[in-house]
Structures are given as C-alpha cells and as structure tokens.
Length: 251
Length: 288
Ligand code: HEM
Ligand code: SF4
Ligand code: FES
Image (cartoon, rainbow over all chains, first blue to last red; front, side, top):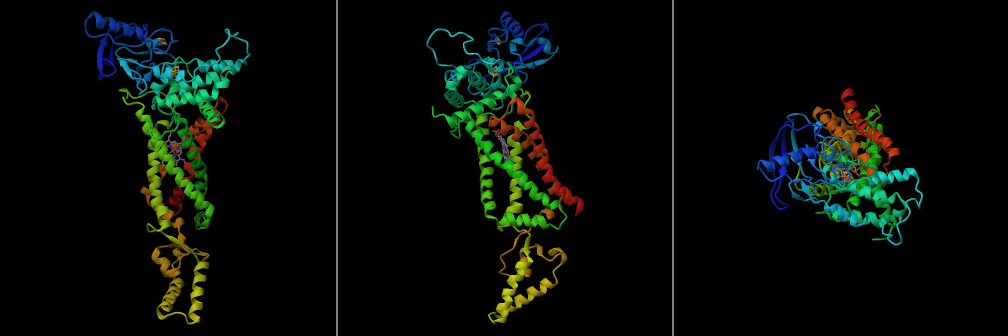
C-alpha cells in the first residue's frame, strides 16, 4: 500500500505545531497502525529526513491505554471498540491520505508531536478512585459473595483503560465517561459503597477544576471508547452525584 | 475557565429542570392553539385566551415561564462557552464520531427558537401590553353595560353636549357595524383596531382584550410567515428530540431497561408537539 500521511509535528509543549506530510510506500495491509508508524520513523531516521515522530505506546495489545491517536476524525481510527495499536492497515486503502492528530483538550496538553500529557486523569483518580480500607492482609477474593450480574456490570465499568478517547471524541472535551466508569465500578460493589458519596463529589470537583467540559449527552464518547463503556455509566454518575449532594454532608 | 462557579453536573441539572418546565408547558400551549381548529368562529379560543389573560395563577406561571426561558438560555450559553474553552486547539479533520441526533446542534436550534420567540413576543405579547398595534375583542354585554350607565347619566342630566354627541355617534356606529367586526351571535365585537374600540365601545372603555384569534388568522394569511412558522417548528422538533432524551440522562433516569421507551417517548413528543402547532396555520390556509 502507498500512503500519504499528514502528521502533527510539535517540538515541545510551548512550540507552535504544524502538519507535516510524508509519503510512505509498500506498506503491508497486515501491518498494524503503530508498526506502520515504526516503519515511517525508521525511514525518517535512516534517510536523515527528520526527527522521528513521537507517539505513545506500551502494551500494543489494547490494555494499557497509551496509544491514543486521532485518525481521520476519529479517536483510535475507523474501527469500533479497538485501540490504535489494534488497528490494522487493511482498514485503509491504497493511496489513502491519513491525517493523524494528538488528542485535543485543554487538560491534555501536547508534550511532543502526538504525545499528550494525560496526568489529569491520574489527578482525578487521586481524588477517590480507590477504596481506603488498607489494614490487614490481602482479603480473600470471594470473601464477600457478589451476584454475577452485579460483578459483570462492575467489571464492564472497570474495563476502562484510561486512554482518553472519550475526552478526545467529545465536542466539549468532557471526561464524564471516564469518571463515570470509575465511579460505577466502586458504587456497584459493597467495598466501594461507604465512600460512594465523597468519591463522586471529589472526582467531579477535580474533573471541573482541571478544565474538562460538561456533558451534553452527545454520546460520541460511547461511540469511540475502545472498551465500549456505556452511556448508562454517565446516567449512574449523575444519579450518584444527585444522591451525594442531597443525602451526604461529607465534603 | 468557569463562568458560573457550580459543578458542571449541577449546571446541567439546572438546565434540565428549566427545560422540563418548558417541556410540560408546550403541550398546554399547543392545546390552546388547537382550539382554533374548532370551527366555532373562535369561541373556544377566545374563552381560553380570556382565561389565560385574566387568571392570576396563570399570570404567576407566565412570569415563571419567562424566567425559565431566560435562565435556560443563559445557562446553556454559559455552558457552551465553557465547553468551547475546554478545547482551545481544534482538530484539523472534523469529527466523524457517531453522535446523538440533534445533540451537536442544540445551541443553533436553540438560537433559532430564540429568534422565533422574539418574533412571537413582538407579534402577540407586545400587542397585549399595547406596545404594538393589535386587534382587540370586547364583550357586547360589557359594552352594553357601560353604554347603559352613560345613558342613565344622560337622563339624570349629568352630561354635557359633547358627551351626548359621542354617545349618539357610538349608538349609530353599533347599528351599522360590519359583519366581520362582530360574532354572528352578537356576543362579541371582534377584529377591532384601537380606533374601532373607541368608535364602538366608547372613548373611556377599558374592558377590551387582544383578539388573538383574528391576529393569528391575519398572520397565517401571509405565506412567508407560515413558512417561517413551520420551519421554526421543525427546528424545535430537533431541539426537543435530543432535549427529552437529555433530561432523562442528566437526571440519571436512563438505564438499559428504559432506554428504548425514552427514545420513543422523545420521538413521539418531538413529532406530536410541532405537528400540533403546525396544524393551525395549515388549517387556516386550507379553510379561510
Ligand atoms: C429559546 C431559546 C433556547 C435556546 C438558546 C436553547 C438552548 C439549549 C442548549 C444549548 C441546550 C443544550 C444544553 C446542554 O446540553 O448542556 C439545550 C438543552 C435543552 N433544551 Fe433548550 N434552548 C432554547 C429553548 C428551549 C425550549 C423552548 C425548550 C423546550 C420547550 C428547550 C428544551 C431543552 C431541553 C429539554 C434540553 C435538554 C436539557 C438537558 O440536557 O438536561 N429549549 N437548550
Ligand atoms: S472510558 Fe473508554 S474512552 Fe474513556 S478513557 Fe476509559 S477506555 Fe478510554
Ligand atoms: S499500546 Fe497499550 S493499549 Fe495500545
């Protein structure tokens, strides 16, 4: 396959970025998207054309959430329910132009090229994405029996890998799907219940402080989430927030 | 940058609550308008308008309604600004993700509704408050009573020459009132301009009301106005479809079990309400 790549290049967080166009020939359709970028970078280095294009990645099997790229107007590219590292070049056609941009959101500043700083998510997690009973040994996994349905629901919500595609896809750069996944996974299980109110209050407050937008129920997040978290998580977050505001005096 | 220092969800809850009031109000307004569809020379519609214009509970609701609209617009506009600020650098390729119908256009459909509301206000509410020229209706019974009082004063000799002449002129005018300025049963003088009110009801007669029936029918004779009217309600339908789904979601009343039902409720609401309003001009064009 022969491709034309339009890639965002930006020296550092402060520099002004721009798009650079590269031609790439003889790419195998079996190649993964990130392998394709590896090949590009090898060429850029070997032919002494430019510095390699920086992009984040780690596991390359869809579990770490590092590899977010905004490809032709969609986070993680044209496939539903996959991360960029799971995307393959067979989804494109010979002669295609592919535009690759970093996530765009005020709380996710670009560090270099396609790499953004997603530590805003960590700051939200620090506000309550945990349970704080820390004494004693490791509890037995099945000490508290949980009905299968609830366990499954909590597991679905917990499958969020923190990739940030929901923020990238949202016209408001809202982090509601991410936050709702975290709030849900704890709220649905008995261990998370005692801190449910304080958790949702703190996490929402942090989310707002960091400059994420609010939810207009556009559901682009749901469409783009590689782990297919559902919009019902956001409804649960809203519900939990109302309950916490009305029923809890914890700050 | 937060323009209103409340949690994002709290602001959304406020928008939703204000919108919910509007959503409940709309069917009432629609029902009222649809009284025009009865071919009774506007009797039902006149009665409803009289009730709406004079009842004190309705007047309280009118103020609440106005506040709701204003606050809805202010908060949604603030949210829109805040949300834009959350993405200072945009994407080069416009977003291709699947989104909920209407959700991306809320500020635009809302803006168009706002323009329509302004026209609506100038047309009807301003006439009511006397800021613009409208058409008026007066109950014959009341005109008669005022006339009788004056006639009594005349008998008791408490009137000067000028007042007497005025009274005579009014009597003559009523005798030859054209058919389109009264109802068939002679219960109401309708379709009156301000001058007509003076002529037929007397200079100091205060008990007249805006004749919304004839004002509406006048307006709907203008095809351009009807076109704008119909377009505005299609736009409203789009705003309402997302709006209904959105209120349920914002209040956390959405789950897998009810998602389908809420979707269909929104579809039905967003079709029935605009259609109900739209039937009035269509009826007027077809029949008058
Ligand atoms: C008059 C001008 C109007 C403007 C500018 C306007 C604007 C908006 C905007 C921008 C939103 C999205 C808010 C968000 O998701 O954050 C919205 C939501 C909504 N609007 Fe309007 N609107 C207007 C009138 C109306 C009217 C007349 C109604 C109903 C009768 C209505 C019903 C709704 C509903 C139900 C929502 C959803 C609320 C939620 O997301 O919780 N709007 N409006
Ligand atoms: S909710 Fe989905 S899209 Fe958002 S961070 Fe988690 S995995 Fe990524
Ligand atoms: S690199 Fe880990 S999810 Fe893609």
